[in-house]
Image (cartoon, rainbow, N blue to C red; front, side, top):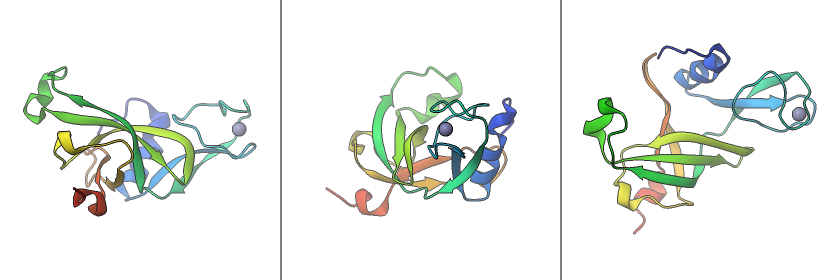
Length: 135
Ligand SMILES: [Zn+2]
């Protein structure tokens, strides 16, 4: 994928390497998303990319049924979700839930990452194996 915002490049590079990382402030120790010059919590400069466990939980989601993006018409309906991570308090990552029946997605379900395999791929998530088999 072509990254038009260079500050996001490490995030996508880490994802291609099978890692999830977010900016973590060296002063107050809090995570923030997205990358920005200064920590939004304490306004200090000096944060670093901190790798976290990519196992997360659905914080909120919506089911997209309208072809806002004509290139994704064949993918309808699809799920856009906010994912929360126990290792990165305060982070809510916008992503897609893939390989799931949209009507089966629920807030609180555990998810696992689907890391991209090439430069054109995007990081997405799928329901964790435990939640895929839940009734
Ligand atoms: Zn801070």
